[in-house]
Image 1 (cartoon, helix red, strand yellow):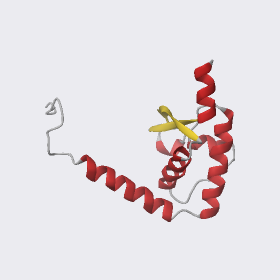
Image 2 (spheres, one colour):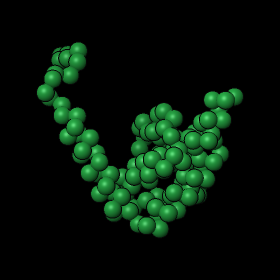
Image 3 (cartoon, helix red, strand yellow):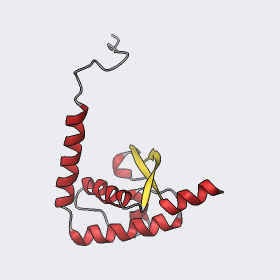
Length: 122
């Protein structure tokens, strides 16, 4: 038996605005429930990795013992989002996660803004 495939989304079946709002609501809830000490340590770790100018992901912060795991994995998003909005980092694409617990699922990778600019000039 084969699976029915549609060549493109059917108009009216996906509410993009509602999806985006649900994402913002979830990120705000995660941020509100994040331990302030962890958030401060995570921001320092992100800034340290960003200063290197190399591509990194959340797992690298833990592997280098710059920060511990958060209480919930959903707390990574607000931490990286805040650093991106502040201009510390920018998205550099996607790669398989290095975390064993997620079985190499896709995750966003980041680079320091100064590192990205330096690579463009090279």
